[in-house]
Amino acid sequence: MKTRRRLAKSPKASRPHMPGYGLPKGTKGLLPWKWALDRLNKSHNFWIITVKPDRSPHAMVIWALWLDGELLFSTCRQSRKSKNLARNARCIIAAEHADQAVIVEGIAREVLSIPLRQKFLALYQKKYDFDMSGFEKDILNLKEPIYAVKPVVVFGLDEEKFMSATRWRF
Image (cartoon, rainbow, N blue to C red; front, side, top):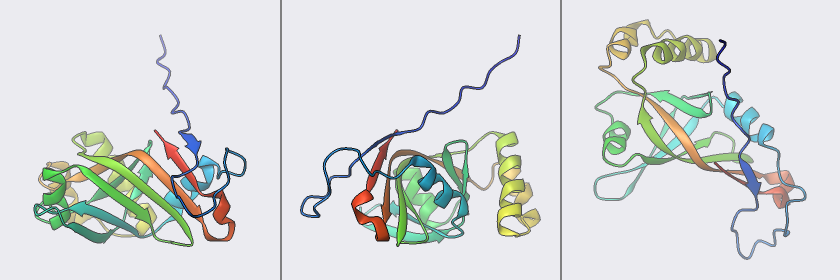
C-alpha cells in the first residue's frame, strides 16, 4: 500500500490588524500565499528576533531555508539566539527586503532527524554556495543545532501595493 504524503494546505489569508492605516475591509486584493513563499525561498539574508532572559529583544542576521512549511537555520549552540530559543521558543524571522516584507512569527524546535539534517546541509550548500563540511560532523552528531521555525502567523507587506497588506494564519 502506497503512503500518500498529505499536502500542506495554504494558510488562511486575512487583513492584519493595523488601525489608522486605512486598510480596506474584506479579502479583495490580499496577497497570494505564493507571493510570500517566493520571497521566503529567494531571500538570502533573514533577521531573527528572539527574547533574552531579561525579556529584552535580540536581533541577528541568519541564513535560512524554507523547507516543508518551516524556516530552517543553523547556529552554534553557544550563540545568543540558540540560548534564547532554549528558554523561549517563540521568535520572529523576517526576510531581507523591507519593501516587500515577509515576517514570520513562529515557534522554533531543534531538528533531531538525521535525514532532515542531511537534506538541510545539501540544500544550504546549494543555496548559499557555502562549504558546510567543517560543520557537518557536529551537525550530524547533534552537537550543534539546526532549528525549524513553524509559522503561527505570517505578514506580507508590499510597499507599492500597501493596501494589499496580508496576514496568513496557520
